[in-house]
Image (cartoon, rainbow, N blue to C red; front, top):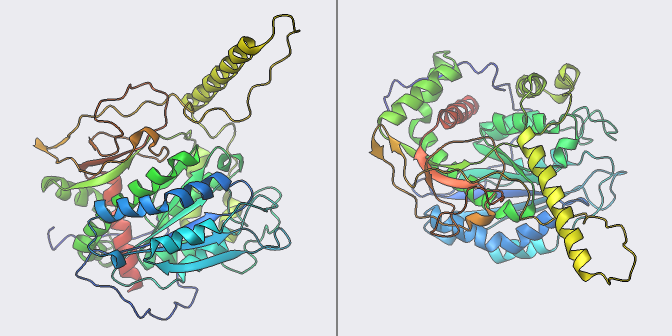
Length: 462
């Protein structure tokens, strides 16, 4: 990158004064700046609705870490540290615990053991102790030179964002504000990815808008999932993409931040120039490619902007607008309707085959939990095995992971070389399964913007 790659004023992107809390003392283990290292924290909702996600994380944590270690090209087991924070709610909504912080460990069998102690229970008023869990994660002993990433898994918002029936409508009882915590994370180079457990999350008025803003502030992504079967692939894909992003932030971050903070240029302008320069040198990155289930609306865009720019929840909530109608796209709703009809038809046919001819026909009730294989009719993205950047082919990543159950959910679409594939043969485009693909492709404008934001935040704090 050119040394004159300088960057913008952060207004409109949540670049607010963030340092309301005293930073923890520096850890004894700072990490090795000459090696690729990753500190990864899982924040797991442990309220009553999260049993399948806890089970999926527990079952697959060792394979998740093995894929990250191999595909992320880490050199030693201590290069990967995994942390775990579990949360429920504040009393009187829940009297078991608010948070459990298990700390960091490079012993993945110990992480598995910690996960196996968790179970879903409790939760009272809808919103949960998300903010308390974010504060716990922020104040863990992160290594200075490691890539830092948080994966939050939940189906409910934090307290204080304006939801009906919130038992703590003024916000988290511990006094923390999630918008301020997110900005502190951004300043320390901690990227937040949010796994939105749908369709439950969209039953709230403002939860999806809030989490879109929260991940945007930290330059992360929001990944809506319709089933816990997809959790492994969502995690692995997002981690590998983030490692590529971290590499570029470390390479061009200082020059980019100078343009934004020193020269008072706009984030968008600098991101566009950065994108062009990276394309010209044929820069490729891994990216999680998914199809959105969310319907766009002016009210939702307004709410995301409000949360992103507000200094606190107290400032944001009075400005929020109600989103009328469903949060989901027509395509998703039609697919779910077709799936429900198909499940009902299959069940009635099966019941008829088993019935005794002389017996009277009884009304049939469709199963409450239809087969997860038929969740939507979204087809896999039909991209070629390789894509080009100005006529130059991009190498396909050797990473392979059961794409038949690949994660489904974020906000990005596009072409590129696929990395999540269950079989060598092409799968039918309309097999009805949810999919997410990890692709090696030319860097996107969205990624360039995230690099610009991360660079500005880190320099603003230093």
